[in-house]
Image (cartoon, rainbow, N blue to C red):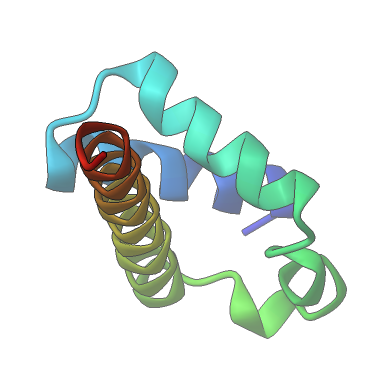
Length: 85
């Protein structure tokens, strides 16, 4: 599949596997692309498979979940620091 088709597949899988709306799935893929996550996929056609798209969708979703969880913990620490005299 072409590079563009591969990105579309990852986006579709994110929406289907994790019940994300289209805008959220697109944002994850665009952000990953901006962070050069897909550079190797662009260079190596053999990486553009449905199986790889599933793995990449899972990786992107998990990274997003980890980021959200880290931000939540940081906010909780900040709130606790403000409460402690």
